[in-house]
Image (cartoon, rainbow, N blue to C red; front, side):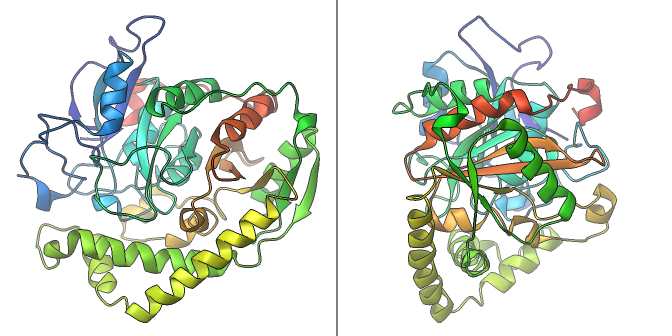
Amino acid sequence: MGVFVQQFYDADSEKVVDGDSYSVAIKDSIHMAGYPTQAGCRALEHVAPAMNDAAVVKRLFAANCRLIGKTNMHELAYGMTGVNEWTGTPVNALFPDYIPGGSSSGSAVAVAAGMVDFSLGTDTGGSIRVPAACCGVYGLKPTYGRISRQGVLPEQSTLDCVGPFASTISTLIAAMEIVDPSFRASDASDLSHFKVGLADVDANDEIVKAVSDCILSSGVPFQKVALPSLKAAFNAGMDLINRETWSAFSELEGNPKLGRDVKERLTAASKTTDEAITQAEIVRVGFTAEVDQLLEKVDFIVLPTLPHYPMSIAEANSGKTDLTISSLVRPFNLSGHPALSIPLMASSNRPVGMQLVGAKGSDELLCELARLMSPFISEKKHPNKNSAGF
């Protein structure tokens, strides 16, 4: 099926309804009344249609948005490649040799291919920011709890957030104003009003250079900073997502309709110990305090979205997996801070994401910093829509 698993309108002819309306796609882990929420999982193939719209869908309809369809995803939102043998894998529109990233693969591709103005995904361990970086678009994980998760799978999560994808920061800001009634766009006048901390992290040299060069060319004041608990936070985030995914979908263990990678991860998740969860919660408290204290010294933290380049789609189709691709994003699901991935390009013409992290509740200023930096970010032309697996 490629990008859309359920399509309501023709993406070519229904892109913009009027000057104040947007065409939108939503991830198939978000309820829409009258349509099944299958979460990319064949084991949920015959689930009953949702009875009610999710809270964010109600916001979209209230803003007269045109919902084009529900987008494909990595099964049960439990993987980072975006590969799905049952529903098909969306083709990375700007970088077709690479994975689209997961789990919100279809939502990222729909934006990158120009099929919609913006889309909604979910991010439990990087599932918005990873595909945004892979596909060359903007992707925001808001402050935890800022956007309602009512009507979103899984029902319970201490990590997951609903957030938007867009090809421009101005459209992403407009999306946030629609789905978050408390969001009020900021209007800082220039980059000199901000001070950012450029984090020293373990990442590919070319990626680090692309991020550093963007900061330098923008002229935003910066200083070098460290996040010593980043790795521990990644491991803690893995333990928590395993426990919470097992709690949500344990009844599917052993179901022959599960994909191989998700079947293996779900079985492994069943073995997550109470001791591991207790330790993960201790790390959560410590890492959150570490980030909060750093954000008292700088306005935002800057680091790459991905530590290395995405794997090729051929590697992913052969069964290769890579959870370490989320090593620089998953920690901020643990802490709950808002984090935005900005698309950059490496000197080798491969996808790079620059991640901005702000204090809790600073989503508006985070987006404003990105808006002010946008002149220093090269725009990428959308390909022909037919090349995106549509």
